[in-house]
Length: 237
Ligand SMILES: C[S@@+](CC[C@H](N)C(=O)[O-])C[C@H]1O[C@@H](n2cnc3c(N)ncnc32)[C@H](O)[C@@H]1O
Image (cartoon, rainbow, N blue to C red; front, side, top):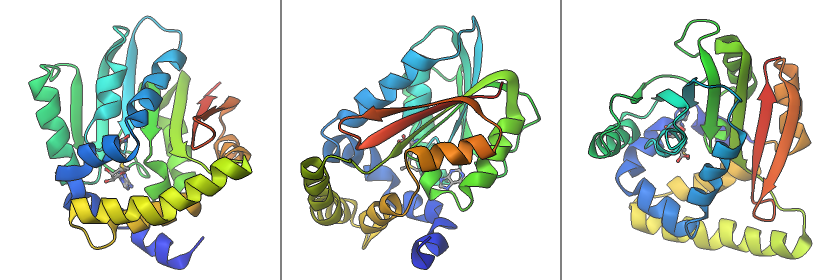
């Protein structure tokens, strides 16, 4: 792993504190709204249970939590994030939608999860695990906090395999997105870091190998929008 990126990951939550107020706007604008469609995909793969107690790691401004509760079987979502700035924006959104009896956002680390063993039916992480200081350790800890019939779903950027899509993707991610993102967020290099962290992170079968190593079974990956992002799914048993 690139040393500069790995050092910044340890404190990436500070970057998110600084860009929290523009995060949602930039997310939806820079992805042309596709990020909303991607998060909705999670609903198709919920565990087959009548009542789901979910944990959303790196919850940020709460968009995954707000998506999960669209399915009535999801009774409760606990969202953890290390960035107070992001959580505060999320708590406000949850209150506005009167979902504060179902969604609980709080400070918490996704690598050393502050929860008891076998607590959750589902754990989700969207566009978060690549920022974790130790993704493998996080996967072991997620395995610990899931119930025996629990499921993990991870959504993360990947690199498209089609050469033409790949060329357009690199042009957009390396040149356009960092320029627009840094300008609008008024941060000197937050979006340059975000792009580098994507290219530095294992994706596809390499990421599934980390999940397998942590003990997950029935591993699946689903390519989203030409492979720009991937949804990884694994069960505890
Ligand atoms: C790109 S945002 C994703 C937010 C949200 N999941 C979404 O889909 O919009 C990444 C988030 O990861 C959080 N983060 C980074 N390291 C973390 C860690 N070790 N534990 C929990 N959250 C972390 C950051 O603070 C940031 O809010």
